[in-house]
Image (tube, rainbow, N blue to C red; front, side):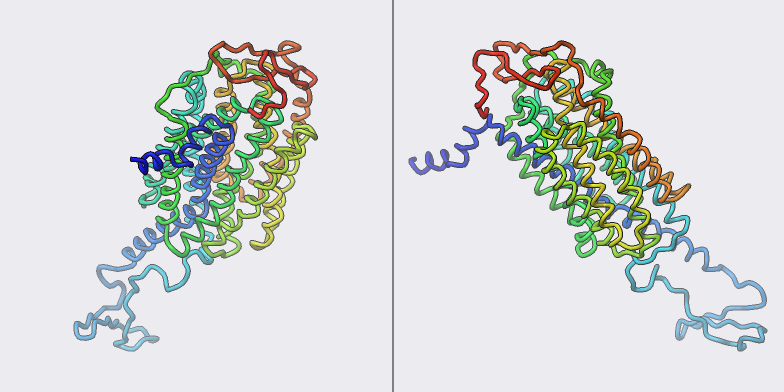
Length: 516
């Protein structure tokens, strides 16, 4: 009996029970959720274009082979089939041929033994892949865009725990579907289902962080760390997917992600207790009112247009590389590695630095850098020429995301009620609009006027939008001092902000040095 009690009170479990309300543990859960979500988001980037092209190419080649097999000879030639050696001879009166000459049977294989991803023809079939791949990639963001306005208010009513765990369950099903789907329809359905799960995880995760990190500087640091999980997913996803697809197959990377997702779900189940309804202690500002706030719209626009740049690259860049560079399969994913590494660097550096230099300035510089870097992408002649512009794109988007995500929470504290589900639903809507419009419109534009013009259009848009970030330099409050008086049953500490950016706490229990 003593041994049983000792095992039951194992130190790790005890620590988890004691630390259930710890902000660090919540941050860890959000970090892992965003990591796996974005690994699934990006692991398909190098796999899907090549996989769909190979499937469509085999189907087209099969049709061509069938159409090239005549039912009867034409002209003055006649075919004689030898049942002895299974050869075919042509007889006729051509001066360039003997009366009976052997003819090699039509090959039944689709291609000779060579890498199918090397040097595909830049024909209509390859160009059509831009549209198909773009629509498939955009389906996730489109569904997420539709779902977000419902998830935000839902978190205000039932808390963040249940939507967070629901997001895990949906993501797990989507990952399994990706692993075993072989048709475009099923892949499209799996990608769309991922949008619902991602909406639950991202909105609930960011809202949870904003609710427990009430100090503006601490909130910026915490969101920067959480975005580091997003960056790690973006970093690992494309090279992981391309290498596994090249050497193991399409199914393997998704099964590995499914196993990791199960571990994350177990952690959420034990720590967050998702069966418990935990509504907010006060009624938050409606999502419609928040969407009418011009400062929130500017911040959301920065997130949207910055991420639209990389969203347009994801489906179009691999196909453009297949047209111009003759890459191997693993190179299609490795091409995104500089952007992923620099995004990870940017989010970690500017999570702290942006608060000191001014988040509006950090975002303004980031938008300009995104535009300039994206304009340089078409000048690359090989995969090595993509390193610098892709590095610049990822680093700049890291600057924008690590600045604008905390600003969304700051604007709610300053101008509205400090309940964060709806405002981070708007932030996620902006993110999704970039990843919905980017791939779908980008694929069509790349097909009609070419990849270089596509990069020019989005680069100019980012540069023109950048000056609007100046308006976030000193946003006015609805009142000079915006304070949120909490219900007596709510233990969450809140901060208020004056128009000059100084902050103070209403309440007798406030301790400025307290870490919790």
